[in-house]
Length: 250
Image (tube, rainbow, N blue to C red; front, side):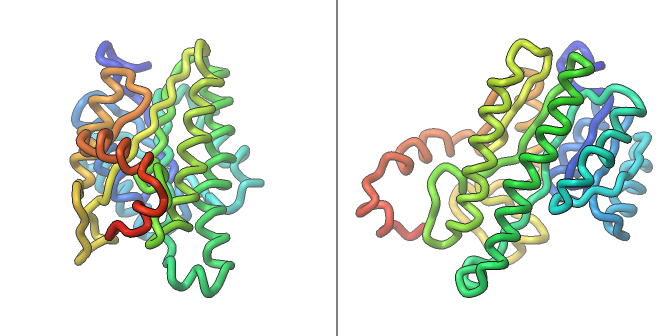
């Protein structure tokens, strides 16, 4: 069960090698989280992440999970919930794709959509049903400001995140009153190993996202922006006329 401050004692991460997700887990383990499931494709990286968290004092287990194999989600994730209640599910998997390549080779764009949206819909519904059955818990969905309005530079990725964001909001409404809380997290550009050498306005870090997730859980927020200044900025960008928006250096 969660502690008095709304923080979880048990946690399932969908996307167990995500740099952002692992920053969240480290922060929660430093508080009250003791049992952690890392779900992802079997790999040395997944085992290294598990070993690192064990050194921090958590009881960590891994489970084979492939976002693209929706037919396996019920069985794979069902094993986790069969071991006992899960206080928090962190849906953190996704791929950025390569916009220029994906426009030339649509199969790449389809993979982005299937991973970021279709896979998330499947895993989200499977875990939401399990959380509802146990009568408590939270589902935190890592979305992106890219989903607020598609940019020419990454509209394939942005559209997949727009779908994910809308899905998560609707799922939260569907679970209202069930004891299950859904929180959508919308980070801006995140500096990480994957984005090394790149930068953008309002850039953030995995640790800053983790801090915002913890605060959001304590407040039982429905939506969390990281950094918070992005909320008014995106409110303006979302309503700009297209003729103006497409001229911006975004």
